[in-house]
Length: 350
Length: 243
Ligand code: HEM
Ligand code: FES
Image (cartoon, rainbow over all chains, first blue to last red; front, side):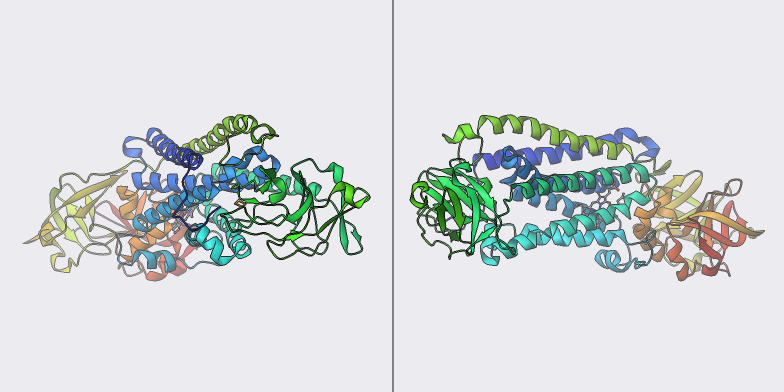
């Protein structure tokens, strides 16, 4: 939760997270370069620059896999949420490593020549009609541009100014970027003499990313209660079935954001499932100290009016709630963010 | 319920025990998978071939300078040494030294018995004398069809390792456009291992042929030998992909 913008808000967990991520990155690079140097020595040694290009490229791709898997993993088990809360720093690190890879390639493979290195990268090979000769470097370049846009807009400043929905859409570009990179490697390294290991690693990675997404999608499908319409309102099931300080998710018919129905000490309240911060799933959070607490970064909102407790100013849309014969009824039309609406009491409706 | 016992992590509250246990297992396993993948990727790398680039103290050698299709110094021991500049540049204009005895200064690159000299920067690296040396005639070996890969001779002879294949295509093209002699690294057994690629009249390779660089290719043309160095005279129409 922020009142103003600070450059980056550091805290002990964030520092620990960053230290782990940076340590993993350096360990990867050291292992790769070390193994490459041990494997081929003397007259058969691989150029240092080539080793570094391969280490940074494959390292960045490996980190991208971790980034892509963390999201669905946290949906599958909330215990993985700590991996998520600082994912943006991991993303920026991945971009930095990928940018180093691109820079080394441009400097080494495209430098030292009669042509400007960037020009050489962009127009040297235009065989877009051939899979064998395809300029795979351009796929990597396009992916790097996308990663740059995401890294540059990763700060909360952009989140606020673009709006959560636009920001989220922008950051969904990580999937097209991933697809570009699969092409980059499939039409590059996979077409080199070590085709089989490279192809196998690429396929295993893609299978892992898809598998986690499918599993998480399947799981959250199961969580969505179908909510039949009764006089325009939605039925959200028996009030007593919602665990205390937890939520049940309800799908509004005809799309729209999902609704998180919380049972807390004051009764039953419904708010949007979408956190005002980065769109985190509020319904997977919990009521702590009387406030709905987002599982992603811990932003809080009061259930009765969707307002963050002072001094914070964030607001989320609320929904009207009733209890009829022990069953929760929700008005699917969201009230403007921060609108107070009385929690429904289990005794009041029956 | 206190925050710590029901397992939901909030970054400003103490980490619940279940979450802590999960992280203690998940973080190292993720790191382990990543490092395992890195090691496998690193070990899948192939040998770039035996080649050396001795960029220590420059050497001085003498011989007769020939310029077509690409500048070569024919040494007194009868060895042909290819000449290039620093970076991805073919040699300076050496027309004035054609056929003369010269001293040259530079750094040797060598692979499988084929030598190249990267000339020192500065006019002093090529010192033509007034004497003309004996120039052996190029000997035709007839029409041939050779399979292999057109590489830029400098990278392949040791400047960059590996200096071949798809991932090196952009660099090789840049080198050849810059005047580094294109050379066919031949797969066909029994014949010469390295063959310079020239146009039909024995001049530098035509620009249209650059599309075939770094791809498996069959090159048809007339093969020549001079001073232990092979050259094929060809044109784009006589090249075809050999995937
Ligand atoms: C300007 C952008 C980029 C350029 C010009 C570029 C170029 C290249 C080149 C020339 C290679 C072949 C290296 C070799 O084996 O000799 C390569 C390999 C690779 N690149 Fe990129 N790339 C770019 C961006 C990226 C990005 C953003 C990623 C991933 C995040 C990436 C991942 C890889 C991987 C995994 C390999 C295979 C490494 C290997 O050969 O062992 N590249 N790239
Ligand atoms: S998305 Fe960051 S706190 Fe909710």
